Image (cartoon, rainbow, N blue to C red):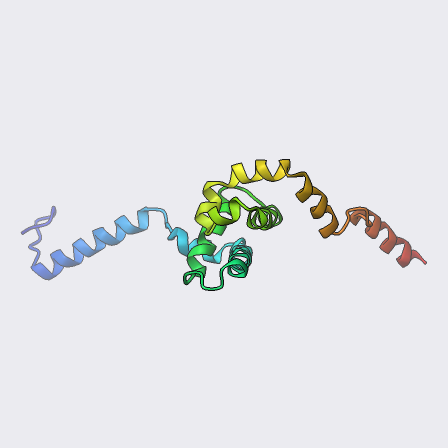
Length: 161
């Protein structure tokens, strides 16, 4: 076989040219990472693990011999809720706590994938639950404390003194 300049090419040279073509093709494509690996390295992964453990603890309180849980798989689903569904860890923690104390939803939400599927419905039901709203206010520290602006102004005043 000859190249376009009339040089005779042997099989070693042909395989080398094929490898160069493959390498060029790889380099021209944008680098794409596996979404699961990217998620584990992402900023929401630690929160996803904590929220997965929170759900697991709620379930194990009610049923000690619950099936073995793959925490990495659960955290992957929680990570999707945080990243794709744009929920904060605090919102998600509230939904987990509420659904696991509710008589109906505690039996139906036994995994993060089910939680994600029913998330909008759970949030709407949670808002309507007046007793939960009252007890939540008691559990959370009040926001009546000093704001960040007040703390900053105090630190400036302390430096001036």
